[in-house]
Image (cartoon, rainbow, N blue to C red):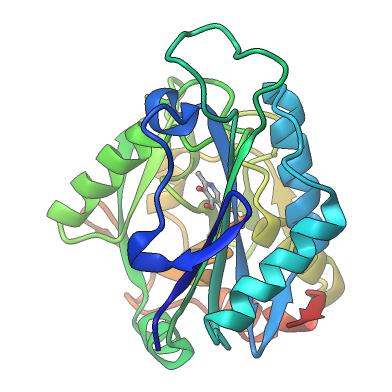
Length: 287
Ligand code: PLP
């Protein structure tokens, strides 16, 4: 079956889907995006993702490309047309197409929008979680507004590629105080030796992950000891267990940080419990 993408008003064969050479997303990374999980024919936590999209757009003073209801309709349509039962749907909005100039374009330039969807294999993801992943640590080198889900991801690309070249799946950024901020495309969590789950507050230095917010609700419901505070690279290496969260990976256990093996070298019990329980705390929109 051929894939379909939605680009500025049209459903197009994925292989032919393209944006203009003077799209500001292409030329200035002047745009934002969202990634929602598709799980068993539903879009997971769509309202939270759309609210964050709204926030990102407002922070960058980019207008909505269409009414919210129309966006929801097209997202479902793209998922449906691509017959994605499990996977992700991707939404990107940029400031639009205009003659290259750093200043904002004239008011009549409309934002560009692209929506794609693709399948993934939940069994393969669960198998990866059974093994856990390795992460490397990497000096923070991003702009301070990482709370905006901007398409300007070059530092993340370079950090994650460095991780890959070192046999790891993710790079954990650390700030000037040697505290972990977050992963290149995930939020970071540890469980201390005394069994307390710790993650950095969302006020600064991290993206306010939707998966993170769901896990926080689960943690409260399950009565897991929890502290929202900064933690250092050393504290992470001394931790009993660790994991990362994102819509594309859900809760993914970490078993190694740089050269340090955590605990017994196997995924931790809290990470696995939260992974198993994850979809009991999300909401769903049937496609
Ligand atoms: N942090 C960064 C830098 C990300 O890119 C992502 C996801 O893409 C996350 C955290 C996790 O966010 P979410 O749970 O909303 O997918």
